[in-house]
Image (cartoon, rainbow, N blue to C red):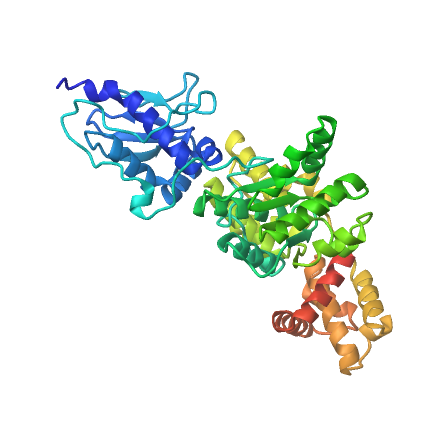
Length: 488
């Protein structure tokens, strides 16, 4: 056999393998992870699958590499080993190392794949293992997964990349339970919280996990606005039957920002019936909003009661510790070394939400790479000056004392008095704790504002409140509520 034949056969071989991967992984996963690959055959005959970024290469290695190797070896008569590398595509479609040929992965959405599993090329000198049907292997049938209705999923939003902390650990645990179990005791799962706290991230993570672990389940993820527009279009086209069949036949319905159907009576009516139909069939529903079901305005009582009938999980505003964890995770994803003092500075100064914290770090890293300056506290202040100015805390100790005194129904004068009864001492400790968290004042300065107390008294108060927050959930919610009232 001609020694160059394997090189000439690589393109049709990879096309057949790609077709099989698309059928097994589904169109969305294929487009996100397989289609960006570039195939190169090295001088020694080894085959390399190149991906544009290190993140994508690592993700494929973790989630898809073993199956890709199995399908490749079943199709390649020469049983050539394959590896996974980082190789960004160029204008022609691939960047190949010198002395190798590069082949871009076909866009199978433009031309539907042919049926049939990859087969060894006729006349090959060696015979590779035969592809055994999935049913014979005792595995799920890798027939094409039904298309996901609605919006595409962001490959960055997975459970692995979600940073957990006290403000979001309950919502995270609930989302994981829904993703890992075909049936759960609560339906729907209703996630709510402010902007940038992780609702959409968790919803994408649920969809990704289900599609990876059980590709045959039909997951529909979309925004409430898209649901509404789809319904309106169906009304205009006099095709509401197709609309109903589309949404009432899914296994998991996920609707983001459900507050946007407030005041839309006809959409609410259709969603109400869709909701009931899916619940009656035992199908899972996951919803998100910026408020709890009971606080959604202009939502009918019937629908509001349905939204609250399952598990309602809220995502609280980020704490300093959670913001620091988000920054550390983001720095790791970006592959850069950021001094701990810089991460601590950003986490302390930018308190709005995780999304803005991530954006600040991305800007800082990009500036350092483009300008060639090291990341220091000085450059951080310079690059993020507008964000820091917008988030500059102007909360005073006096404001904290006033708010805490009102909350616990004591006099402001008690904050500085010598009274040591529990009814006064505990609120005073809470005020000291919040003063440490929300102001730039030193411990001695805080102590002076509380009747000239020593800095060790403030340290004891901070430690005591931290311990109570860790053991008493009700008390922790009380302190968190005070923090949010002061930060708004």
